[in-house]
Image 1 (cartoon, rainbow, N blue to C red):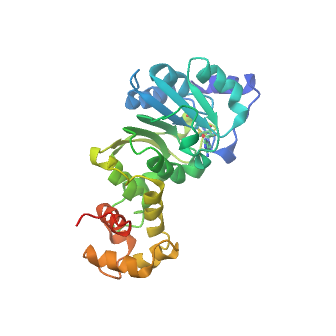
Image 2: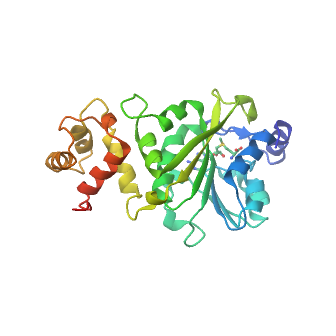
Image 3: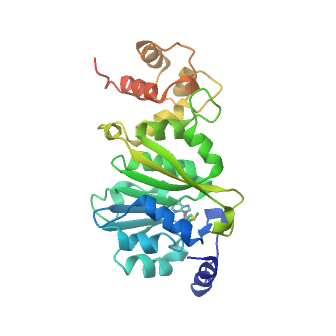
Length: 281
Ligand code: SAM
């Protein structure tokens, strides 16, 4: 799909790009081809796309994947997406992904092997975090993110950018930045450069029970009060008492005054297990 095609699709269906919904449509066939190359879809693959927009990725992904579902917030795309997704055999659900309960998906027991998203930047972090909690068995995630987010995704402990995105993607799998994408590859052009990243699940990441919304919420609350100690940050959510957190820290051999940015990703996992009463003796 190139810029001319995007403009004529908008005109044909009487649509406009809504900046408030992060609508920057891909209009560079090379970038679209490269993203699909990294996704490696085939008939054995079940694919979920978040935010299909005008269908730049979807129109090809739906033909390559064995099963394909897209979740889109903007119902004004309904006619266009019925043409490019539903007619060739895919499914589309019009809903805010952030409010989606995976139990309500239109395909029973839907378990994507690959998740694809040119993420809407205004909700990039919450969508990525929710995906990690919703689909722990997903093998590969291919995301377009804003270049600024790369720092947060790849940050190391004891740095300012280190946070839930770095910790959770690190534990989930191996991650790599594949290539950068200039603003001119989108219509309308965003204010930043973008990048495509791939996260591939580590086998041990699928450890039963660890990847769920509670675990994601635990890591988020650990960073809720960045300037405070981990005890204060974790207890501020009201879910864990200071005594229990203190006992867990001591059991892990961590100092009482430790701050979240000092913990290695594995130490968050260890603490969570202890606080959930699931640690091995
Ligand atoms: N995939 C298309 C492409 O590459 O051209 C569109 C990408 S555009 C950056 C982001 C898309 O996500 C838009 O279609 C937007 O309407 C949709 N979107 C925004 N917020 C969403 C949400 N909370 N849940 C689902 N889709 C959302």
